[in-house]
Image (cartoon, rainbow, N blue to C red; front, side, top):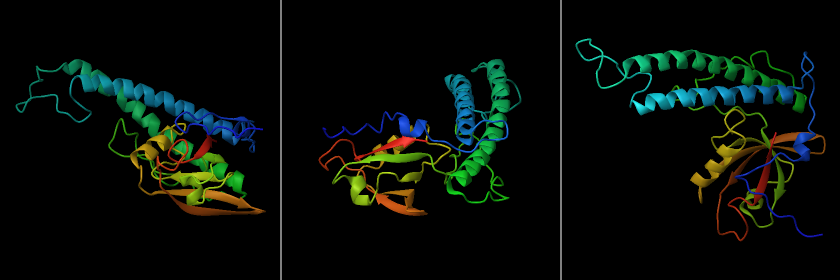
Length: 238
């Protein structure tokens, strides 16, 4: 049987292993994993709407804080003040919805992680604040160290193998990328592209026998290692 071709990290797909992953059910009968996926779909829809409205502001060369009046209090005549005000008024409640949704996602991720590891759910697991999305504020989504991908292939002599990555490792953090902001692993691909020949700190959860432990690995993406891609491994989103 021939050696399987390495999948492209820039176009990951959910295979049968991820599709068959089971988790405990929430009170309404939906699994924790499905609940998170539904929340992520709502997040994607909100982000798309906020981005669309933000592009309207971009066409006028303004943002949410740009003054719409002259120094002496008159409406500016070089921009469509009415349209900008209407657009801002639509963005504000969407941003507030996004803040609430991000808090809900964070809670769901803590619950899912606790189910997967068998650890108790901390009483203050949902106490951390989540900043607004980048489209509405100049702040990055925080990295929440919950599992968001699993390694299903590692090529011999690859940067991934040299860093100690093993098949079955569950990824909790990949550089600045975490469970809340990986965008179906697209951000992982961006992180790799932006850090060629530079060390990326990767936090993985590894199961050995009946024991789980977190490991901090130092991975350096390279093109010249003799195989496909810059990592030599493939990730499946969870």
